[in-house]
Length: 66
Image (cartoon, rainbow, N blue to C red):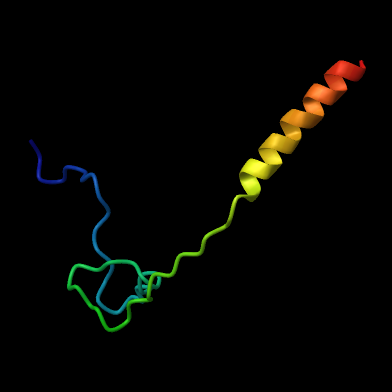
């Protein structure tokens, strides 16, 4: 083995290089909890199933007509 062997990962950036912060809500190693975005979920309703049933119904009607 030689000492000038290539590594699998690039070297870390120099200390004076700008490193972008992680996206909002992304977990970090240090467990920083002050900048966490609250998780908020919304119900989308049953629009998918209504649309799916309407498509099947249209398909059946078109099949019966032609």
